[in-house]
Length: 543
Image (cartoon, rainbow, N blue to C red; front, side, top):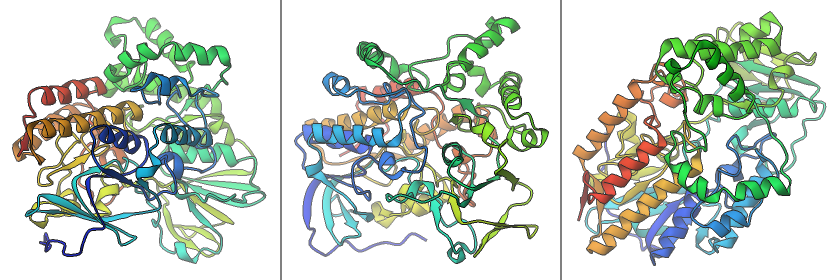
C-alpha cells in the first residue's frame, strides 16, 4: 500500500535548481549542461570520485568493449581531441583517468558531493519541489531531480545462504576493493560467466593455484582484437571526429557500424564470407552490425548462432566443455555478447575446473567453500561473485522515491515497469531520468551515445520550461501509455523478448517481466524524442 508522507518539516541545508544522482558519463555531462543554463546544480555520487561504472569496476580485467574513440563525448571537439587512447579497448585505469580529465577540464568537481548516498526523495505537492535526503543527513530542496545513476549499478551481492559464514573473503566484481587483492597461489571460485565474469576469469588464471568456475548459463563469446595505438592511429581516429558526430547518434546501436545487408539479398556463400570477415574484426560488430534478422527471424538466428557455436567448439575441443559452455537453447545476440581474450582456452588448463550449476545449483556458502544442491562441497580460499545486477530499476528502487500524493516508485515499478521514453515517469513531476527502462541503454547501445542524447533532451526540456516561464514537467498517463505500447510492440517482435536474461529482469525473482531497453534502435529513438521536443512536448503536462 502506498504511504502518504507528510511534507518535510526540517530546514533544507541548501536550496537548488537541480540535484543530479551520479557523476558518471551521464551525470558529468548533465551537470555541465545545466550549469550552462545558469542553474544552481549539485551532483551527488556514492563513489569516492568521478567515473560511475569506471570508478566502481576495478576488478581484474575490467575494460571497454566499445571502441575507445566512440566511447567519448562529442559535444566539444577540443575535449575529444586533447585526449589520446593507448589502445582500441583500454582498461579501467585508463578509462577512469579519462573521466578525471573530463571533470577537471570542465571544472565539475566543485559541484559534486562524493561518498554520499541519496536515501530518498519526496515530491511536495504544495511547494511543487523535491526534497532530497542523503545518508550524511543533508536535505536539499530542489526544483528538478535528475537521475543519472546508471542501468547496471545495483549489484546482486547477497545472493546465497551462508555468505557471512565463509572463512575467506567474498568479493562482488562491481564492489571490488580499491586496495590490492592477493589471489596468488589461492583456490579461487568464480560464480557467473557473463561479460564481467569472463573478464575476471581470463585475467586471474595465471595468478591462482586453482580456479573453479561455476557455470549456469553458457554464453556466446567473440574474440577481442585489441591493438595498441601509435601516433598514426590516434591521428586517424581524431580526424574522423565530424564523421563520428554525424554517424554515431543515428545508427541502430550508437556504434560506428550498422547493418548494411539484408540476409535474403546475399547468397549462402556471401553470407558466410560476411560473417567470417566481421568475426575477424574482433569487436561487437558481429552482434550489432552483421544481419538485423538475427533479432527477428528464427532461421537466420539459428544459422548465425551455429556459426558462432562452431567457432567456440573449434577452440574448446573437449566434448564435456562444449556441452557446458556452448549455448544451444537461445539465439546469438538475445543475451548480451561478451568480448574475450583466450577465455575459452582457460578451461583446457589443468588447474581450471568448470562446474555446471544449472541442474545442480549452488545451495549455500559454507565456511570452507561452496556447497551444491547434491551436497558436493568445493573448498575455496576466495569467492568472486560475478552475479550481475538488478538492471534498469534497481538503482532507483533501492532509494525511497515518492511522487505525487506520496506514491512510491519502488511500489509502482514492483507492479509494472513503465516510463515515458525512459526520460520521465507519470506521477513524478520534475523527475527526469537517464538509463532507466524503456530507453536504449546497456542493451544494444553504446552508452556514451545514448546518455549524451538523453541528457541533451533533458536540458532542452528544462530550457523550454525556462522560456515559457513554467515550473513543472510531468509525463501524462496517456503519453506514458502510448510509449509503453510502442515499446512493447517493438520489443515483442524480437527474439530478445522470448529469451530469459537480465534484459527482461528474469534474473530477479518477482520482478515484472518487460524488455528493459528500447529495441527500436538508437537512431529511431533519437528521432522520436526529438520530434516530441520539436512539437512542444505532447505526452507531457507542462505547468
